[in-house]
Image (cartoon, rainbow, N blue to C red; front, side, top):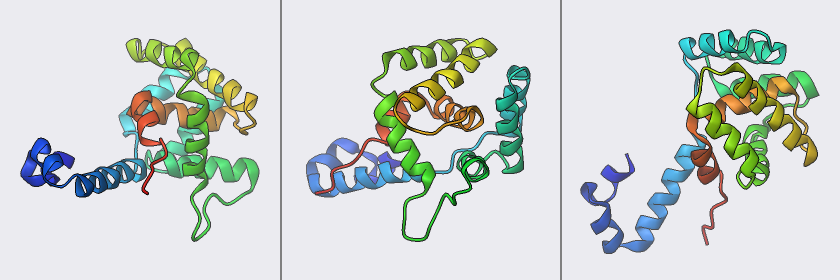
Length: 179
């Protein structure tokens, strides 16, 4: 998508012809990625339900995903509001989902232990212990840094991260300097 937008599809000539415009287009593409709605398909939800059948918090999260047609952010919002009684979005403010992902980024993206757990699960996506371990690890990391996170909400976040990939999550939640 970005390639076709940059000077007729040739990113090299686009970057050379107008660096400032190219920079702005890259920033715009990055913002699109961050705000893009990520979903799990019905089959992905069923696969995770089967995989995590013995982990009750995950079942709650997966039920919420089903209620929200696989929409990860909407499921996060619903679980957050249920747990904390706080609306996740107010007009003119960032959503709790976006703020939470940005805050969590600071803790996860430099954590080699979590990164290795994601890699292990990615290499063996049928492993319930590895996926459950990722969820429990996320709860621990978040709690150690003052971020409230129960296991059902952590399940949603982990499913988001494994869906898009940790490197993508880290890169696209990185703050931009638009000065």
